[in-house]
Amino acid sequence: EYNKEEVSSQRKEVNKKSWNSDIPTWDFQDFNDPLDNDTAIKNIWDDATAQVNIEKKNVTTTGPGNDDATKEFVRLPIEYQFRIVQMNYHVQHSKDTPHHIALRDFMKIALPLLYGKWDSAKFEKGNHRSNSDGYRRELYLQIVDMCLACASKFQNFSDSQCYYEEQDSTKRRKIICSFENNGDLLAVSKVIFGLQVAKLREAEKRSAPPPALRFSHE
Image (cartoon, rainbow, N blue to C red; front, side, top):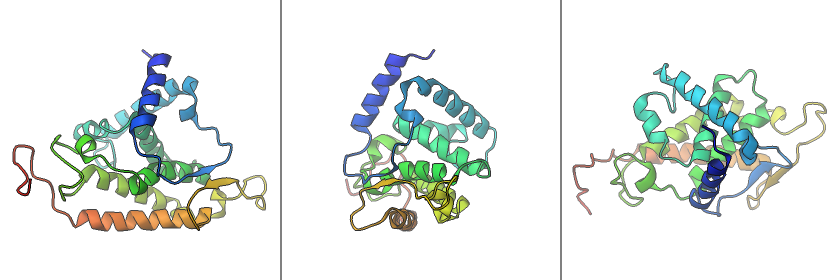
């Protein structure tokens, strides 16, 4: 049963513990984010649960789809889980999704991956990982792949729908961007390129041994 106080407490805990404050800002000004509205959390949670249940029936779905994948994703901060579900929903319903909405949700997922500190001990499978063990971060890589799939589905967010108002194609959307020496559009390109580099680097690493085996260099 939905408990507003409990959800509010969870959200405060997520904001405190998820990723550090060094993550650059990229967002539409005065955007009404349902995840910032406690009264909307129940509907979002219901939608997220329904989406995960649908994906469980489709083993070809990238992301929280089968039981094992779902177990791994619940390690992530709950707000981040919501945003992953939102992004995957946009990819599956790209014809009906406004491109600027897909872009915003993409950035909410991608920025922590590139500029935050990924907690391998907490997020990766096995409870035996560390950020310095040198092995592939499987869940990290999976989410990077999901972000790149989203960017590809929306033409790498290069079309005018992302940056100009639908009602007036000459009126630019107001965007808050803290990337140093980068405009908002260039920042998006920089993030996509960063994800591509991250994928290549992570894919080159070896898979981590199972928890029963100790890392040789520890």
